[in-house]
Image (cartoon, rainbow, N blue to C red):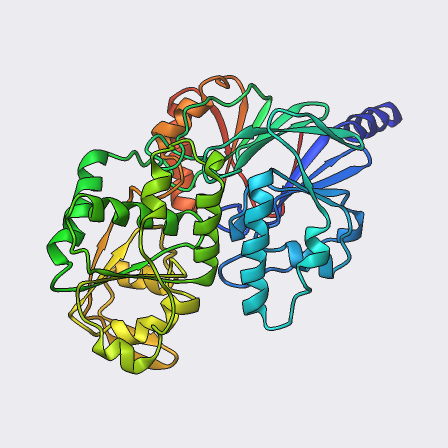
Length: 434
């Protein structure tokens, strides 16, 4: 018995473990703790849309944070980590560092002094290029392109085994960059599952339908497009630029981008053309006319008439200017709402998308009279076909599914199992040891 105990102790001493504290059976709040020997690192530190962003462990023992990309659901708990005493290094690619500063500024602005300044946090940033091995005590990591947004990366952890964290993966239809690479070989892979077993179809037709929808309604409807500040806003501005170039919308169409953060990010895209694979996209994005002043005054909104296109954040209509516009637009038949991103079922966007006729906003009920339409082509996430291609070098690896709602995870597990993969769905707070 004593010999068996010694063996188990020895095995655990040299085993690597992974525990998810967000992003397991959910699409946001990604944060995974990797432990090996005397080293503890976090993969991402994302925030939850519902605001439940507790950190149920001591952050002072964390040696470093390795960031996959700059979306809030992957960096949104960095300020809280610092507030609780974390002073380790935060590793990221160069574009991720520039974009993270803008995103954290936005988060801090809405936190109403409950979070620390971003300056001491950004001083912890350490830039790491793709394909360079970086050592953190007992482990080494390496970044590989994920093609989700500029700077996005998958992370290979080298410990007793090779563990690959996909981060959010791009797709084959990306406007700015495309997922045309395969994952490096690893023993264990943690893979995002936002779209489950869904495969996009009629892609060219849907892009054309988006353009036609705007062109056919530009003179009769107020077109409202809630967007995410990072990457989604820039894609829609690019598409609007194409509409201008093709003469499909009047040259006097007013374009409002109601987000200081999205405006900063748009300028970052324009000023850093090396971030974007599709070099033709930059002039189109740059020449799109947009402005964000004077708009939210009630009198101005009442007088608003076509041709006009309004882009506002947040993309799920649960915060910022989108939430401010919702009670002003929700009951107006003249408004055409275009969904261009994932809508959480509990968000206002999700409730509209599900067909609810009446929605309560700030304790007041509103009748849903606006028209809406959904497009799936602008998501920066890969579908099952994209991720199957990315996975193709890892047929014999252990697969763990994260970053998806339970229904998507179950469907994807069945899908991958039928293709011969060994698949598990990650549970929140469960420690997986390898």
